[in-house]
Image (cartoon, rainbow, N blue to C red; front, side, top):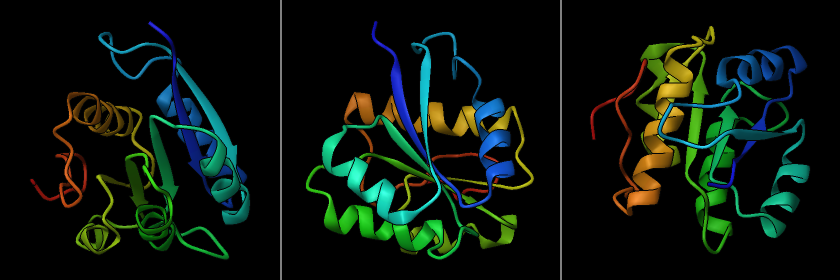
Length: 146
């Protein structure tokens, strides 16, 4: 089994480190190891998405200059075969906004090292099984049930 390649977009380097630590080397026992590529700017992420097929993109909704929800929306619109996306929102009550962004999964900060890998794993599994839809939000720490 080859490793999963995840893209992580957050302008805050501390948040990127928290996410990387929470994701660890493996999301779940039934999934391969994880390689995480970090991006601090939307331009760098979008350029990488043109060249690399990521298994999932994790986006910080509070990132600047462009938040993860807007970027999730752009990814679905601008990338021919967009990867699944998980958005990290500042508050659980903001999870409903992720439906507008067409995110495939959502979780909230502060980063929970149990919830984040679970949500990403659920999105990856659904994508691999072909059951991920453009409007589904998988169950997680701050999601609605799709």
